[in-house]
Image (cartoon, rainbow, N blue to C red; front, side, top):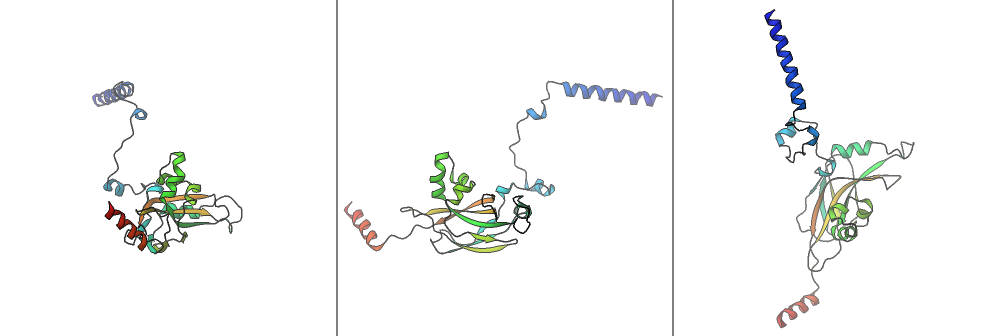
Length: 217
Protein backbone atom coordinates (compact mmCIF):
# COMPACT_ATOMS: atom_id res chain seq x y z
CA UNK A 1 0.00 0.00 0.00
CA UNK A 2 2.84 2.37 0.91
CA UNK A 3 4.49 1.51 -2.38
CA UNK A 4 1.32 2.33 -4.33
CA UNK A 5 0.95 5.69 -2.54
CA UNK A 6 4.58 6.52 -3.33
CA UNK A 7 3.99 5.70 -6.98
CA UNK A 8 0.89 7.90 -7.16
CA UNK A 9 2.82 10.73 -5.49
CA UNK A 10 5.66 10.44 -8.01
CA UNK A 11 3.22 10.44 -10.92
CA UNK A 12 1.37 13.51 -9.66
CA UNK A 13 4.70 15.30 -9.16
CA UNK A 14 5.70 14.42 -12.73
CA UNK A 15 2.37 15.75 -14.09
CA UNK A 16 2.74 18.91 -12.04
CA UNK A 17 6.33 19.45 -13.28
CA UNK A 18 5.27 18.84 -16.88
CA UNK A 19 2.45 21.40 -16.67
CA UNK A 20 4.74 24.01 -15.14
CA UNK A 21 7.50 23.30 -17.64
CA UNK A 22 5.16 23.85 -20.57
CA UNK A 23 3.68 27.00 -19.10
CA UNK A 24 6.93 28.47 -17.80
CA UNK A 25 7.74 31.85 -19.39
CA UNK A 26 11.45 31.14 -18.88
CA UNK A 27 11.45 28.33 -21.44
CA UNK A 28 11.16 29.70 -25.03
CA UNK A 29 9.18 27.82 -27.62
CA UNK A 30 11.22 25.75 -30.08
CA UNK A 31 9.95 27.73 -33.07
CA UNK A 32 11.13 31.01 -31.51
CA UNK A 33 14.73 29.81 -31.21
CA UNK A 34 17.17 31.07 -33.90
CA UNK A 35 18.53 28.39 -36.27
CA UNK A 36 21.91 26.99 -35.33
CA UNK A 37 24.80 28.23 -37.50
CA UNK A 38 27.07 25.37 -36.47
CA UNK A 39 27.98 22.98 -39.27
CA UNK A 40 27.76 19.28 -38.41
CA UNK A 41 31.11 17.62 -37.81
CA UNK A 42 32.38 14.77 -39.97
CA UNK A 43 31.69 12.38 -37.11
CA UNK A 44 28.06 13.53 -36.97
CA UNK A 45 27.70 13.11 -40.73
CA UNK A 46 29.09 9.57 -40.52
CA UNK A 47 26.67 8.74 -37.69
CA UNK A 48 23.70 9.95 -39.77
CA UNK A 49 23.92 8.16 -43.14
CA UNK A 50 20.72 9.83 -44.36
CA UNK A 51 22.23 13.32 -44.07
CA UNK A 52 23.57 14.49 -47.44
CA UNK A 53 24.88 17.76 -48.85
CA UNK A 54 22.40 19.85 -50.86
CA UNK A 55 22.53 19.07 -54.59
CA UNK A 56 24.25 22.41 -55.31
CA UNK A 57 27.04 21.70 -52.81
CA UNK A 58 28.03 18.23 -53.98
CA UNK A 59 31.54 17.80 -55.40
CA UNK A 60 31.00 16.31 -58.86
CA UNK A 61 33.85 17.88 -60.86
CA UNK A 62 37.62 17.66 -60.46
CA UNK A 63 40.04 19.58 -62.69
CA UNK A 64 42.99 17.43 -63.80
CA UNK A 65 44.92 20.04 -65.84
CA UNK A 66 47.43 22.56 -64.47
CA UNK A 67 46.19 26.13 -64.13
CA UNK A 68 46.20 28.52 -65.82
CA UNK A 69 45.12 26.50 -68.85
CA UNK A 70 45.66 27.70 -72.41
CA UNK A 71 42.81 28.93 -74.59
CA UNK A 72 41.64 26.32 -77.07
CA UNK A 73 43.94 23.60 -75.69
CA UNK A 74 42.37 20.41 -74.23
CA UNK A 75 41.50 20.65 -70.53
CA UNK A 76 41.07 17.35 -68.68
CA UNK A 77 38.20 17.07 -66.20
CA UNK A 78 36.92 14.18 -64.08
CA UNK A 79 33.19 13.92 -63.34
CA UNK A 80 31.33 11.54 -61.07
CA UNK A 81 27.56 11.64 -60.59
CA UNK A 82 26.01 11.94 -57.17
CA UNK A 83 22.82 10.13 -56.15
CA UNK A 84 20.92 13.37 -56.78
CA UNK A 85 21.98 13.43 -60.44
CA UNK A 86 21.21 9.74 -60.98
CA UNK A 87 17.81 10.16 -59.33
CA UNK A 88 16.96 13.15 -61.55
CA UNK A 89 18.01 11.29 -64.71
CA UNK A 90 15.70 8.39 -63.84
CA UNK A 91 12.73 10.52 -62.81
CA UNK A 92 10.12 10.98 -65.60
CA UNK A 93 9.61 14.54 -66.79
CA UNK A 94 5.85 14.10 -67.20
CA UNK A 95 6.06 16.01 -70.50
CA UNK A 96 4.99 13.02 -72.59
CA UNK A 97 3.33 9.63 -72.11
CA UNK A 98 5.86 7.96 -74.42
CA UNK A 99 8.65 6.50 -72.22
CA UNK A 100 10.99 6.29 -75.24
CA UNK A 101 10.84 10.06 -75.69
CA UNK A 102 10.72 10.92 -71.99
CA UNK A 103 14.51 10.99 -71.65
CA UNK A 104 16.99 13.22 -69.86
CA UNK A 105 20.72 13.67 -70.34
CA UNK A 106 23.51 15.13 -68.22
CA UNK A 107 26.16 17.49 -69.60
CA UNK A 108 29.31 19.21 -68.40
CA UNK A 109 29.10 22.85 -69.44
CA UNK A 110 31.75 25.59 -69.42
CA UNK A 111 30.54 29.14 -68.73
CA UNK A 112 32.44 32.38 -69.31
CA UNK A 113 32.45 34.17 -65.93
CA UNK A 114 32.85 37.60 -67.57
CA UNK A 115 29.74 37.09 -69.72
CA UNK A 116 27.85 35.87 -66.66
CA UNK A 117 28.90 39.04 -64.84
CA UNK A 118 27.76 41.28 -67.70
CA UNK A 119 24.43 39.47 -68.21
CA UNK A 120 23.66 39.20 -64.50
CA UNK A 121 24.60 42.67 -63.31
CA UNK A 122 21.32 44.17 -64.55
CA UNK A 123 19.49 41.88 -62.12
CA UNK A 124 22.04 42.28 -59.34
CA UNK A 125 23.35 38.73 -59.80
CA UNK A 126 26.92 37.61 -59.24
CA UNK A 127 28.48 35.29 -61.88
CA UNK A 128 27.98 32.30 -59.56
CA UNK A 129 24.28 33.17 -59.23
CA UNK A 130 23.81 33.85 -62.95
CA UNK A 131 25.30 30.40 -63.69
CA UNK A 132 22.28 28.86 -61.93
CA UNK A 133 19.79 30.60 -64.28
CA UNK A 134 19.18 28.65 -67.47
CA UNK A 135 18.96 31.49 -69.99
CA UNK A 136 21.92 33.38 -68.52
CA UNK A 137 24.01 30.22 -68.36
CA UNK A 138 23.18 29.22 -71.93
CA UNK A 139 24.20 32.67 -73.19
CA UNK A 140 27.64 32.33 -71.55
CA UNK A 141 28.70 28.89 -72.85
CA UNK A 142 32.31 29.06 -74.08
CA UNK A 143 33.02 25.45 -75.12
CA UNK A 144 31.12 22.56 -76.72
CA UNK A 145 29.33 20.81 -73.89
CA UNK A 146 30.29 17.22 -73.03
CA UNK A 147 27.60 14.58 -72.61
CA UNK A 148 28.04 12.54 -69.42
CA UNK A 149 27.16 9.03 -68.30
CA UNK A 150 27.07 7.28 -64.93
CA UNK A 151 30.29 6.30 -63.17
CA UNK A 152 33.64 8.08 -62.94
CA UNK A 153 34.57 9.48 -66.34
CA UNK A 154 37.21 11.73 -67.86
CA UNK A 155 36.27 14.33 -70.46
CA UNK A 156 38.17 17.02 -72.33
CA UNK A 157 37.00 20.56 -73.01
CA UNK A 158 38.43 23.27 -75.27
CA UNK A 159 37.75 26.55 -73.48
CA UNK A 160 37.29 29.75 -75.49
CA UNK A 161 36.29 32.53 -73.06
CA UNK A 162 36.37 36.21 -73.95
CA UNK A 163 39.86 37.72 -74.07
CA UNK A 164 40.42 40.14 -71.20
CA UNK A 165 43.16 42.69 -71.83
CA UNK A 166 46.28 41.82 -69.86
CA UNK A 167 44.66 39.39 -67.42
CA UNK A 168 43.49 35.77 -67.30
CA UNK A 169 39.86 34.80 -67.86
CA UNK A 170 37.76 32.62 -65.59
CA UNK A 171 35.51 29.78 -66.72
CA UNK A 172 32.97 28.08 -64.43
CA UNK A 173 32.32 24.37 -64.92
CA UNK A 174 28.90 22.98 -64.03
CA UNK A 175 26.88 19.76 -64.41
CA UNK A 176 23.36 20.19 -65.81
CA UNK A 177 20.52 17.77 -66.57
CA UNK A 178 18.26 18.54 -69.51
CA UNK A 179 15.14 16.92 -70.97
CA UNK A 180 15.48 15.66 -74.54
CA UNK A 181 12.11 16.94 -75.78
CA UNK A 182 12.07 20.24 -73.88
CA UNK A 183 15.36 22.04 -73.25
CA UNK A 184 13.59 24.40 -70.84
CA UNK A 185 13.48 21.43 -68.43
CA UNK A 186 16.98 22.21 -67.09
CA UNK A 187 18.53 21.61 -63.68
CA UNK A 188 22.00 22.35 -62.30
CA UNK A 189 23.90 20.15 -59.85
CA UNK A 190 27.04 20.35 -57.75
CA UNK A 191 29.50 23.07 -56.93
CA UNK A 192 30.74 25.42 -59.63
CA UNK A 193 34.41 24.75 -60.38
CA UNK A 194 36.39 27.82 -61.53
CA UNK A 195 39.18 27.39 -64.09
CA UNK A 196 41.73 30.13 -64.83
CA UNK A 197 42.50 30.58 -68.52
CA UNK A 198 45.80 32.32 -69.33
CA UNK A 199 45.70 35.62 -71.19
CA UNK A 200 46.92 35.18 -74.78
CA UNK A 201 50.48 36.31 -75.46
CA UNK A 202 50.72 39.77 -77.02
CA UNK A 203 51.87 39.88 -80.69
CA UNK A 204 55.56 40.71 -81.33
CA UNK A 205 54.79 44.18 -82.70
CA UNK A 206 52.55 45.00 -79.75
CA UNK A 207 55.24 43.89 -77.29
CA UNK A 208 57.74 46.20 -79.03
CA UNK A 209 55.32 49.13 -78.76
CA UNK A 210 54.82 48.45 -75.05
CA UNK A 211 58.59 48.29 -74.50
CA UNK A 212 59.10 51.60 -76.37
CA UNK A 213 56.35 53.25 -74.32
CA UNK A 214 57.89 52.04 -71.06
CA UNK A 215 61.36 53.22 -72.15
CA UNK A 216 60.01 56.66 -73.05
CA UNK A 217 58.30 56.90 -69.67
